[in-house]
Amino acid sequence: MESLKPVFAGIFGFLILFLVPCPKISAENDGIAQDAPPLVSLTAMQISDLRVAVELYSEDKAAILRRYEVEYSPVRRERLRRFYQSWQQRLAEADFEALNREGQVDFILFKNRLRFELEMLRVEEQRWQEMAPLLPFADWLRELQEARYDRKDVNSRDVAGMLDRTAAEIEGLTAALDEEGRKTGGVVKRPGISPAAALRAARHLDHLQDVLGDWNRFYHEYDPIFTWWMEIPFGRAMKALEGYASALRRHLVKMN
Image (tube, rainbow, N blue to C red; front, side, top):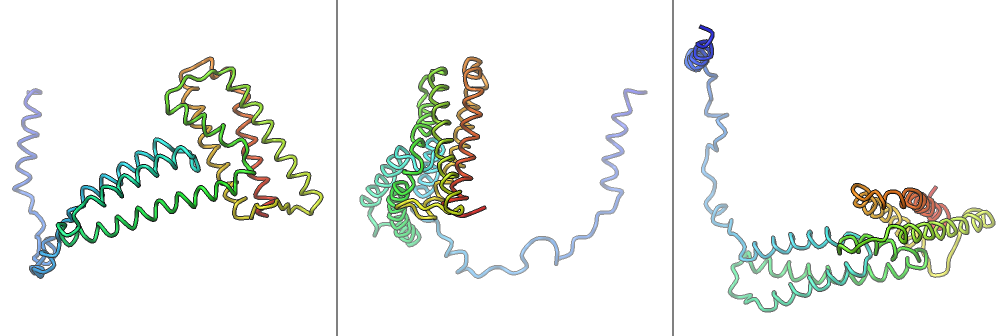
């Protein structure tokens, strides 16, 4: 009898579908449009001839930014520049007149977008030149992550020594700013460094903390030798980056 219980339960559940009255669905709330839309609204919904190209561009750009994640990196700028210029070349080869109307609109927008992206690379490079005097150590930290993505071997002992010396350098820059700030009432001015450039440098230090943390986690999870060598230098470097970013905001940007 026990073996028949599932059968009876199934039959009972099936009968409920017929015995329990279903709520009525009115013509006003059945989820279906009551009036046919104007045909012009349907015939105008054409798909651009460049739809696939635009989607591919967006996906490839996102992949490049994931691969070259360090902001203000000259390696990333050069890779993006080649990418944008290659798409400019493909657009130049296209027959504009052969595209449908939507495709022509996308062509013009795409062309303008590529021009804008290339101009933004130029602006980024200019901004980096303004920030660079405040961040003499940044390239070395950037190269750690880029070497990791290039699958290069890491000598844990050597890198730990370099990281410790870099932390000491950053601490020295912070101490110098604080000392100068005590003499000038807190506000420090550096030739050629605007408050906006100093703020971008501070934000880049925040970014470098994320980058360095990601780099450390990658090796820390499976390389015990790396973990042993890096425990103290890594923590010191992270603390130094945070302190220097705070000092830049405090003295050069005047953000408490």
